[in-house]
Image 1 (cartoon, chains in turn orange, blue):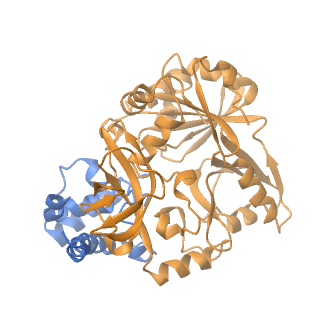
Image 2: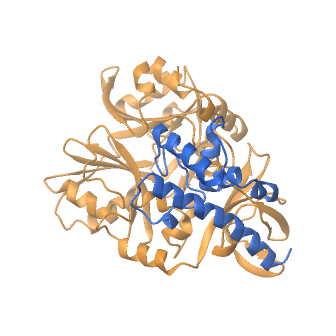
Length: 354
Length: 96
């Protein structure tokens, strides 16, 4: 699935396949786009995120059963991030759930729309209506320490200071927009869900106040604040607890698909946990072994070169009693140090919205 | 450093993190097992979703439990449980 904004992207845009979506990896250079995201304001083409609407009398009951957090009272002015699990407690996807007057709208992680849709349809015991809206709606994001200023110039200054995970139905140039305060990178973040026929205009208008950043810069900034990136972190057989995505699961909720398996893994203890690391030479591939004095204690899950740190930054899944910051481990043949999250402190944490 | 020495160092951090998690759950009346909170979990906005009133409660609780005043600290100290652990137990920072 190509981005509906492809014709509005610059000619030099580099694309890549992420799951079922062809997404812009970078528009110019990773370094430049990363700096825009961390220091000013970036516009994101989030068209690789699938949008699936759940409606019908039992829509909320269905969503409550398949989502791992409590959405029973998710009103149309709120959204929340959560997981969908299978019966074995394995992560199917990480979604943003938007409360809607007539049900729930789910936004998949990048490239996971088709898998999410198939999972929802396979679990539709309630007979709700499940509609793929990815063909007629798309998502644009704004992230950065001054993204709030772009919101003010683009739509309405009052929307900039919405509380986190608040949603407003508004209009832009006559088009209906679902506007939300969200964020993946620790910076001020917003999302706009718009009809595809208005997306290119909104994209161009946004670029008058901010600069485009691609998937590479976005995922790097997500990793730096330990925001889970399912396509990298959800590995075969890894539990929610091993991934460290506990905060996306509400274990006080009575029932949801995968709950028993998640609780069993938690109560069993032991196993592995995920910890960040930096240092070493080069960027180790996923699966690279992690050692202590010749003893295999785990493996690399995901690693990149961090522009902010000027060094390799990665996640390793290691024995639970060695999953802590401040330890020197060996990855491949090189020494690394485990880190305390966040690995980069977002500038937005010290910049007020004015 | 041997693997046992590394385990001991990890255990020291995990113990401070565990103390902080218990304090958060107790002071804020959360209905979760403290161990459900991960060391890397963000505390504000996403993550544990604490708000500014919760911060005030935590300032008081941290001073009472650890004897450390964080009132003038930047928000970054609440970036994660593990980050907060380094504030209340500076020995961890020295080894990080």
